[in-house]
Image 1 (cartoon, rainbow, N blue to C red):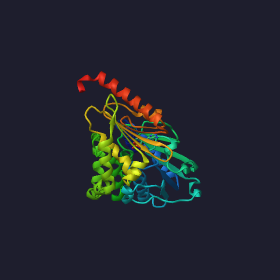
Image 2: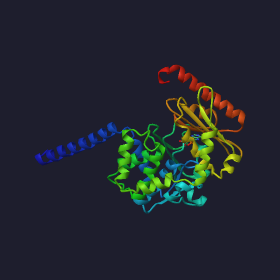
Image 3: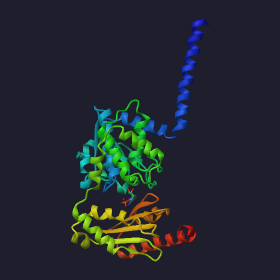
Image 4: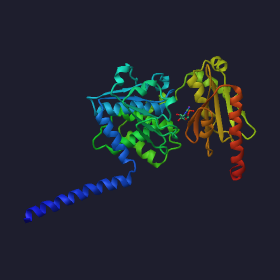
Length: 352
Ligand code: AMP
């Protein structure tokens, strides 16, 4: 072998080692790198991509769906990308509209379901018509319904998972201001305005602020309420109850809600106002629908998603949803929550 060949061979070996080292160091720094590459590969493979999210969308579900649609439309203009679900609450309408599509669009489509732990909660049952499904979620897993199930429980929002996805491939993906607004809103709402955000969440969210989004307009849309929604808070403050151990709860019947002319959404949002009663580390809102009672459970320190699981629900350790069908079940759920709080108080006397 001549000296030139030897030189070329050595150079090739050095380059290959460098590439290998880069991959190893990325994998070492980011244990999800392989999963993200697999998802990107699927996205690049399909002509049509349809994004679904959970029923009764909150800021994170809608932000993740519309944000991902925007990210994909910007970077793959030749593909057909849709967001579906319907029933967007008025306070989120400023984020944008979803798509209305025919069933035939699902043929050979990739379906991406965001922010949803189980099949029952997916808005629009047609998600099952897709050729392959990718689940991208941050709830405590209830069901692996996807061909790929990308779940990161430690992330405070599904939108944070998507920002992290974009960050990994930021050398090839462009993220628009419109997309940044969606992802930022989902992060803000699901972390309780950053109350439960860790350092990584703040770092990821800051990437969205770098895009120059109008946060004043965003917070105005999130915060401004109809006067009826204010009036029903008076009912909450004067009618909430406490169980013997201190679980705070309120039952809002359909009759009461209609008396105050509040929407279901407005009444459901009252749960957060029960969050600061001394000694009350679990607080619950029961809201009467036509055939069921929706339950919203919240807590500090204490894990309550297991209570949600016992009543057709689930969610996060300290923020879960459930459904009961009568007052007897409501009483049982309250007894379970009361028992949990009692045990916690006995074990943590220093806190009280
Ligand atoms: P909510 O009180 O409805 O906002 O729910 C709190 C959290 O639990 C949210 O992240 C929901 O997505 C989740 N959640 C609510 N209901 C259910 C359910 N039936 N099954 C699984 N997760 C739920």
